[in-house]
Amino acid sequence: MRSLADKVLEGRRRVMLALAGTLPVLFTPLFLQAQEMIDLPGEDRWLEPRFEEVYRIGSLSGQGWEQFGNIRKVAFDDAGQLYVFDWQVLHIHVVDGSGRLLRTLGGRGEGPGEIRSASSFAVMSDGRVVVGDTGYLAYQIFDANGGYERRVGMGLEDAGGALWDFIPDPAGDALFSAVGSQMLLLVYGGNAPTHTTRPIERLDLTGDVVARDTVVDGWLPPGVEWLTSGSRQPTEFGPRMLLGVLPDGTVAFSDSSAYAIKLVRPGAGVQRILRRPLQPARVTNRMIEAEKDRQRSRPVSPGMERYERELIDGLVFSEVVSIVRELGVGWDGEIWVQRRGEEPIDDDGPIDVLTVDGRYLGSYRAGTTAMPDAFGPDRLVAFIEEDELGVQTVVVKRVLSL
Image (cartoon, rainbow, N blue to C red; front, side, top):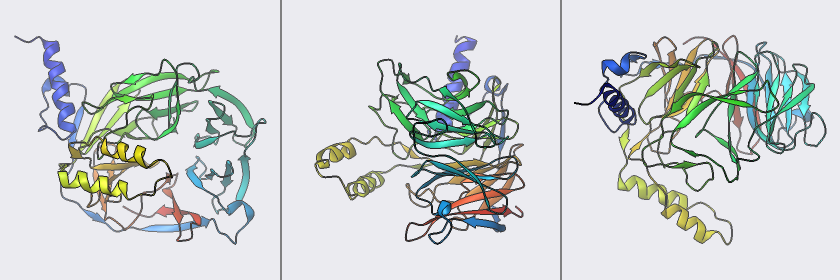
């Protein structure tokens, strides 16, 4: 007879495969002891978008600071102030509730308070700003008035590894980051780890170098080797690693091809899974050839044709097309989940709105609203828009009702 430990391991294995869309979902009492499974309705209940525009910034004819070069990210603080990161000049502009400029911090340079190189940042609830400066391999911290405080090393110099995008811990002095999310930097080193999972980590910023603590091990599809050395890339159409943080510090994440939003508390493991009975589509040969043809049609730098052809010919495809394409968290505890569209590469499908306690509030039809690029207090949301000339605008709106 199999031991209790063997039964638990087998149960976990089957759950992981089920959430990836490769097996029917069978949950045993052994597995359910620490988790609550909530099954949401399968039929969509459509919501009418009701947003009130608060202000917009960004114009070729506007003030100098709002003639943006390349907006990479926006974020709110507790006071509803918006922070806009212009990657082209490495400036972070802070505006008030009416869109009036309050201050600008950062800027390209080598001096205190200047940024060597960065593509992401985070705003703590008290207004402090953390910039992932890849030039220094450190997180630069600015106080709530924009003054430079200090740098905290990323700890990537010797071992090598990857820097993944990050979001603030509402409790302060820490960030959350997930292996397999958006990669910001790859550092080559002899001790670069090989990942068999996609862990979500909490990065403590109180020391001179970040201290990493694994919150939960996210699922990595079977047969995929995610090497931070960059020698292997994730599967096409496969599950993305997506996460957001709720106001109480609970992490909401999606790591599977099926519709399963998992809620985890640091130190307590996954406590709740919100599921909708939507099935991932099987990947067909037609889908594979269409995707390869699409990638072959992209412009290629001179001399790189052979390399690109070999790269495309060697693409690894998932067995199913993942459902969840984006995840965001509102400050009132709502979870926004964007699903795939009609085609496998279509990221702009319907957007579901859920609550942390497991209620389905409804869905916005595809095309009726974009996924917000940032969420703020008092139901504020921000969208980065770009016109046909490439001019970027940030539009701040308030969600009136759901």
